[in-house]
Image 1 (cartoon, rainbow, N blue to C red):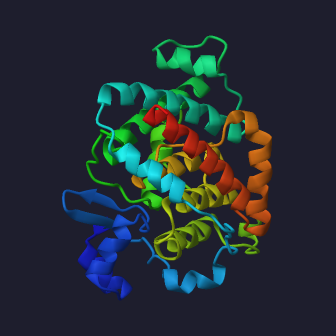
Image 2: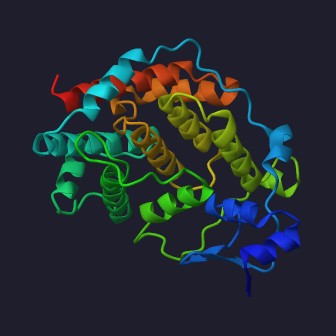
Length: 305
C-alpha cells in the first residue's frame, strides 16, 4: 500500500513541499512516481534530517592551492565549437579513452583494441561476456549524457541533478543485462551490524548532504573529484563501485561544461597512490592535479589544438 506526499507529510510531521523534495532527491525508500504524483510505501520510515547528520560528517577534504583559469578558458572555447561533424568523432574517442581509464582505475583489465572492436558492434571472444556488457553500457550512458547535458555544438536538454536516486539509476543502467533483478540495495558491512560505524545508507545520506550544501559553490572539477573519491571510499554497492563513481564524475564534469575525463591508464599506480591520500588524509591535491592535466589534454583534443 502507498500513501501520498500529503499523507506522508502528516505522518512525519513535515511540510508536503519537504516530502516532495525528499522524494525528488531519492531519499525516500521505495517511492514511485506516476505522472505528477509521488507514491510512498506506507511503512517507509521518515528520512533522516541532513542537519542532524553533521556529527557524521566525512573527514575534511582539501585541495591545496589550485588555479582553474586555464581550464575555464578551455571550457569557454569548447562552448563556441559549432562543427558537429568534427566534434562527434573526437568525443567518441575520448569516451573510449575514459572507459579504459575507468576500468584500469578499478583494477579491471581491459585493452584499448577490445573497446574499439566492441564499439564497432563486434564481440571479443577472449573477453568475458559480463565485461563486454559493462563496456557497451558505459559507452551508451556516456553518449546519452552528451545529449542530455550538452557539450560544444550539442546543446543541453536540461540537467539531471546528482542524487542518491540518480546514482541508483546509473548503477542500474550500467548493469543492464547483467543484474536485472531490479532490487537495488546498499551493501552491508560487519561493523555496521555491530553498530561500530554508520550504515552505508547513513554514509551516503551524509555524502549527499555535503554535495548539496558544502560543495554547492565549488568549481565543477573539484565537485567531480570529491564525488568520485568519496564514492570509492564508501563503495555503496559492493560491486562495480569504481565504474559507478566514474559515471558520477563524468556527469559532474559534463554538467559543468567539461568533457568526461579520468587519469590515463598508464598512470594507474600513481593515481591509486593519490586516491589513497584522499581516503587517509582527505588530501585531494595530487588527484585533482592529475585530473586537471587529463582534462586539459582532452579539451585540446576537442579544440583540435
